[in-house]
Image (cartoon, rainbow, N blue to C red; front, side, top):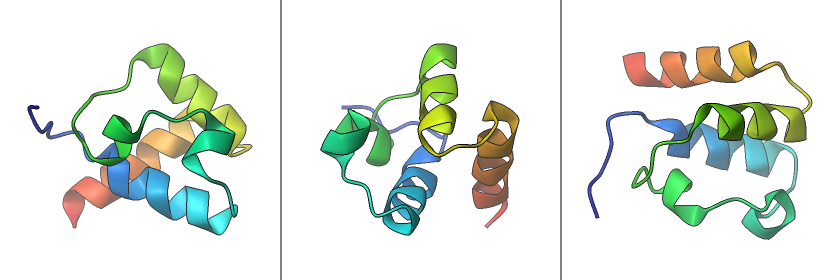
Length: 68
């Protein structure tokens, strides 16, 4: 599988661990955490909602991770 340059995986894993959630509890596709699949707009909103945050906050977290 192709690895994408949209590094959501590290952010998702960190947020899941901070909230003590599993991939199954979030109904999360593990390919997202492995950066092998890019999320669609709806997925971004669903993930943000699961972490009780705005989609824009999630995107900012991803952007911070891109700078590192």
